[in-house]
Image 1: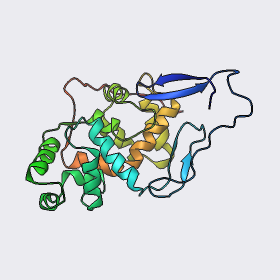
Image 2: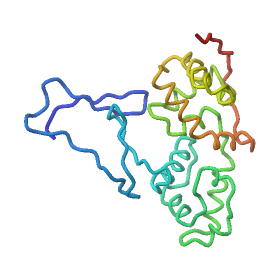
Image 3: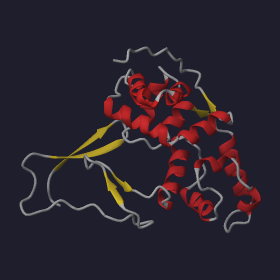
Image 4: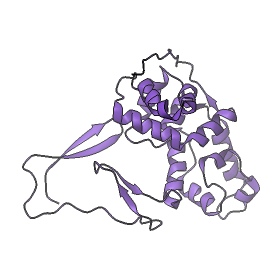
Length: 231
């Protein structure tokens, strides 16, 4: 507290604080990360670089609700507030993103503060949305990966093709995937690894959206074949 820092914006979406040389006050220790999640009490995991801290419990209520809310935000689905998501989560109606595409509307209408009008607004907001592949990729919560970068990546290779890399032999899978996405300007080795891990983690969601016919491709996106040589 009291030290001077430099505020930087990276990847169009994340704010970073960089210490300025000679600015740290003597006798002042760094502010420690919390060790427990304030929502579920699970362990807080800090990345090796110290840039990110997150709850290590995959079933944490805050993470699940936040993931659904982030999906709606990045997909630009209007009219569904976080408190509504929380209410449906508490009722066991929405416990994952896939649930928003198939749920019992009668159960929602019987929740306190909800009704036919509210349910109709939710259904219409979800139904009228076109789920473009670059928006889906950009909505997965991948660290340091903006929606703009996702769109640039989808101009050279489709999400469906990226998913095909997951069928490769395990010894080649990750290197082949990362080699393909690094053809996109602005994507280096670390971000490529983040994208790979994000798609692996959300494989079932992406397959759900593809198999149910929700995913579509923006008219302005045209893919070029990505060619590279594995060494």
